[in-house]
Length: 395
Image (cartoon, rainbow, N blue to C red; front, top):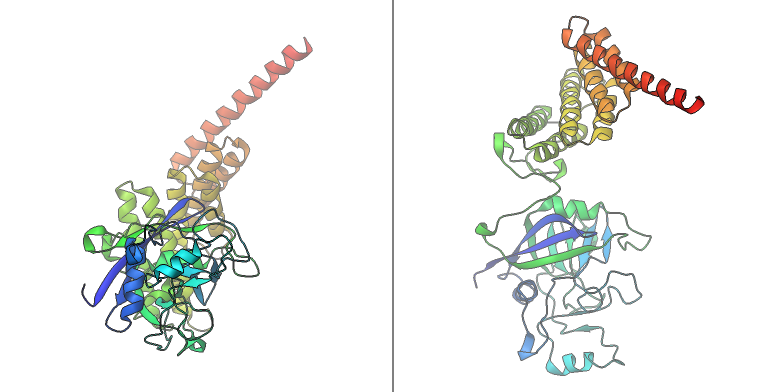
C-alpha cells in the first residue's frame, strides 16, 4: 500500500441516502491508525479471527456542531439504533489479540475497547475535516472510534492521533453536523455508514442531497465556509461564485434536471446569505447581491413547481414578495408562479387573487388575462356544481 490510502464511507440518515465521504489517510505520519482505519473500511479479520471487523452498519453516536462528528464504536453502535449507556464506550482495532477477542465473546465480559494502540502524530487541529482517533481520555487508548472535525479545535492539540482528512463529500459531513441531537450530542435520527471500502477516482462521489456537477464552472464547495480563496470582504469573488453556481443551476434546468437544478439554486442562495454586505457597509454590492437573490427566489419557485412541490414554490415566491424595492416585472413573475402553484393545489380563490396581482404589476401581459379568464371559468363551474348539489339535497 502507498502512503496515501483512500477510503469511502457511504452515509444514510434515517434510512435515506445522503452521500459519500472520501478520506485520505496519512500512513506516512500515522501508520498504525491509517492501517487500522483502512482495514475497518474494507472489512478485515484480525489475527485469523472468524469475526470481520468493519465500519459497515456502524452509526454516529456523537455530533457537536462547530466541533466534530464521532463514530466507530463497532462494539455497541453497529446494530439497532438506540441510545444506551454503553454507546461510545466500546470499539475494536485490528490489533486486538486473540485473547482479547475471545474474552469479548463472554457475556459477562466488560472488555471496553479492544486492541488499544499507541498514539501517533499528535498534531494541531487548525482546520475542519481532519480525521483523528478518539480515545478514552488517556494516552495510547486508540481502538476503532474516530472523529472528523468541523471547525478548528486547538483545545485538542497534542491529545489525539491525526491520521487523515476528508477530501470529498464535505457537504455530507456538514449535513451530519446539522442533524438534530439531544443534550448529550446523540443524534435523534440514525446516521449510519451503509457501506465503506477502498476508494479511487473510478468509484466516484455519489451525492443525494446536493449536486456536485461542475457544469457551468461550478467548482465551489457546497457550503461557503468550506471554499478556499474567498475572503469575507471579497465581495467580487463571492458574487462571482454565487452567480456561477446559479448559472450552473440554470443549465441543469434547461436539461430538465430539476432536482439538481434545485440543489444548485439552494447552494447559490447560501453563498449570497453568507457574503451579502449590509447596506451601510457597501451599498453597491448590497444592491447587486439582492438583485441576484431576487432571481434565485424566482428560479426556486419555478423549479419547485416543476418538482410538484407546490407549497415550497409558494414559499419562495412569497419570500420575494416580502422584499422591498423589487421591480414590478419581478413581482409580477412571483405572483404568477405563486398563482400557478395555488391552481395546482385547487385553491382557485388564491390563484385568482395572485393572477390579479400579477396583472396589476404587468398590465400589458395578455397571457395573464387569459389565465384569469380560465380561473374565473373554473370558479363559475364549481359554483354551478355546488348549486346543483344543494338543489338535489333540498328537493
